[in-house]
Structure formats: structure tokens, C-alpha cells
Image 1 (cartoon, helix red, strand yellow):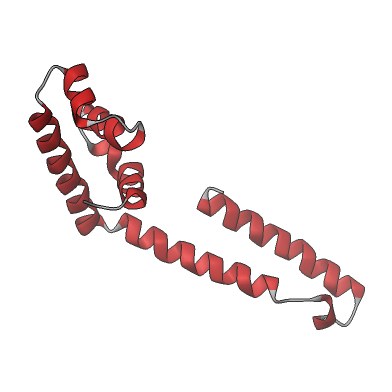
Image 2: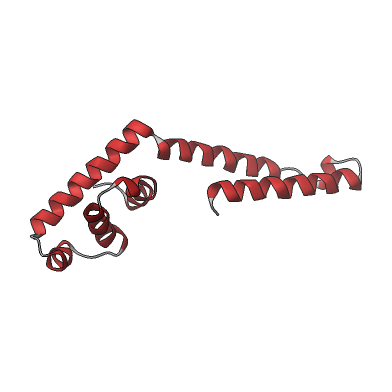
Length: 122
């Protein structure tokens, strides 16, 4: 079974490509923490049918990621942006000759952090 964080990312990126039924059952199981039995009862299908649908849906989502690599690219970009933030954190006032240069850096730093936050959705 795939990890919880992975399932959330798979659904966030590729959920809109699922059928309504696939998306609903995925949501009930992974996001609302329903049991297979509870979903089966609610949907009027067998517990085994729910299990099979979840497994098929998982394979579908994983195949989308294998082909499109959107999550992989997102995680790489996130890592790069986090690295930029670390570099920004390492710059101190001592690195600047004048107060004006320090203030200019602070302004640019704030804009860069805003762009990073917008990009990452934080």
C-alpha cells in the first residue's frame, strides 16, 4: 500500500482525471477515513468491490505519475526553493557595507520569499 502523503499528492495532482465513482470512493477511504465496510454499505456494493476499486484507482494514479511525473517535478522544485530559502537565511547584516544595501536586500528577500510561498502554496 502506498504511503498516506503519497496518496494525498496523487489525488491532488491527478484526482480530477478519475471518474466520479473512483474519486468518491478514494475520498471516503483515504481522506475521510471510512472503512471498506462503511463504504460498501453506503455505496451498495460489496467490501471486495470497494477494495478492488481502490486498488485499480491506485494503479491508475500511479500510472499517471509514471507517465507525467508532475509530482516528481513538483518535489524537485520544492527542494530547490527550500534551498534558496536556506541561502537567504544565511545572509546577515554584516554581509553589507551600508544600511541602504541591507535594506535593499531585505526588500528583495521579502519578495523572493513571497514568490516561494505562492509557488509552494504555503
